[in-house]
Amino acid sequence: MSSVVCPWWLGYVLLAPLRRLIERPERMLGPLVREGMTVLEPGCGMGYFTLPLARMVGPEGLVLAVDLQEKMLAQLRRRAREAGLERRIQTRLCREDSLDLDDLAGRADLAVTIHMLHETPRPRDFLEQVCRTLAPGGRLLVVEPKLHVTRAEFAQCLEHARQVGFTRLEPPPGIWGHCALLQKG
Image: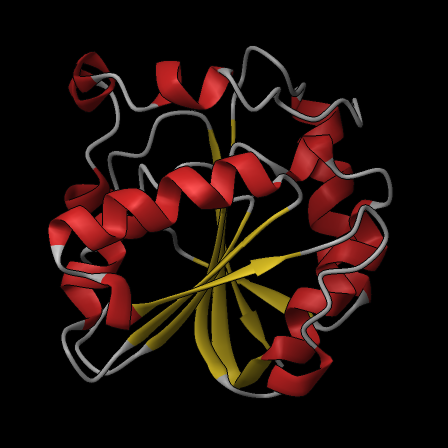
């Protein structure tokens, strides 16, 4: 797998309305999200999934949107403000080697990593950090693009997830790409 990070300017392309023909956030994430939840979204980019997540968690919920690039987060904050969702979204700038979420250990109900795990230089370390952020019984949805990630590479990621304490559940239907729903043990 690659550890090349999606360039910030590609974030605008990823917001294109045509993307909804393949990936509808409400359909993909709706079965997993409830009002009042805290959802961790590492690699949030400019918020293609973040804003719909913020609507789904409702006024009492929170989306922890984490990205490596400040330009991505700045656009996400602007979009959240325009949508009236800024109170439901907390943005966090991370480092290549750390999500910097130690203060949130055990607080997230759900984490979603969509098309980004293959960009991490050390997937096992990344998954371990996500696991620490999840509450007991918390779930992680991993979605990876088949065009960038081979079946063997995805299987290796799932093995890393097992090693750090995740068990595999049945994922929601209709998600394009390699997909796994995992639960913290």
